[in-house]
Image (cartoon, rainbow, N blue to C red; front, side, top):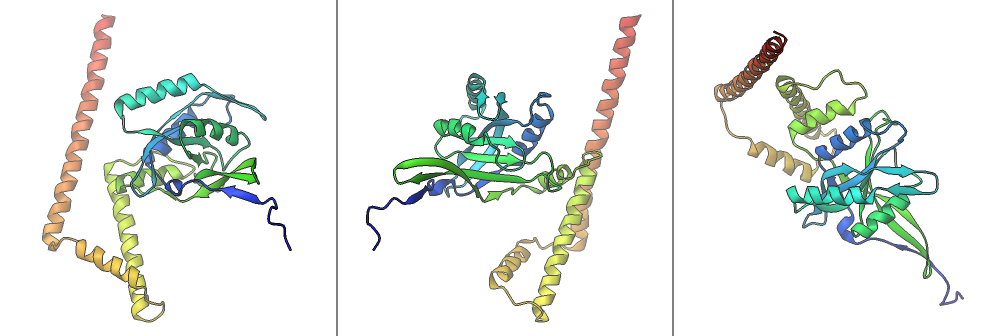
Length: 286
C-alpha cells in the first residue's frame, strides 16, 4: 500500500484568464521592423507587449516596443530604465494599455527565455511570451504564444515550463492583404489600393467556391451534414444586403472611382512636392 505522505511532482497552472491570446498585425509588423533594425551582433530582438485582458479572459495584444539587451549562455541583461521610460511614454498616449507579456524573435523558446520571463513575471501576473520566427524556419513566419507553468516536487520548486496557448490572428480584410504579402519570403512591393482590392475579391471568390462545393457535397451525400456549419452559412447569406446587379455594379464603380481619384490626387501632390524641391534647390544655387 502506498504511503499517504509520498512526494508528488506537481504542475502549477496559471489562472484561466491567460489561456488564450489575440494579437494585432501592428504588433507583428513592429517586431519584424525591430528585427531588421537590430544591432549587427544581436541574434534576436526582445521587447514588451502592451494590451489588455478582455472580459472573456483573452489577452488582447495591441502594441509593443523593443528593449535593448545583452545575452549570453547563462545570463541576460535588460535595459530596465529604457523599458520603464518607454512604458511611461506609451501610457501617456494610451493609458488603458498595460504590460501583458514580452516577445522575442526566433523559432520557439530559447535558453535565456526563462530568465527574461522571470523579470516580466515581476512586472505582471502570468505574462504572455510571444515568439515570431523571422528566420522563416518552416517557410513562413511562425507565430506562437506561451505561458509559464511551474514544476515542483512537493514544496520544492524545480523549474518553469513553457506551454503553448491558442493564439488568434484575426484581422480585418485590409490588414489580411498586407499580412499575407509579408508572410512570403520574397516581396517585390506592397500592393496598392487597387491591387489590394483585387486580392480581396479573389480571396472572397475562393471562399464562395469552397462553400458552394461543400453545399453540393452535402446535398449529394458525399459528406455528412453539419448543423452548426449549415447555421453559419445561413446566417452569412441572410446578412448579405438585397441588391440588384445594377445597384451592386454602381456601388462597386463608385468605390473604384473614389480610389482612382485618391490615387490621382496623391500623384499630383507628389509631383508638386518634387517640383517645389527642385525649384528650391535651383534658387539656392543661383
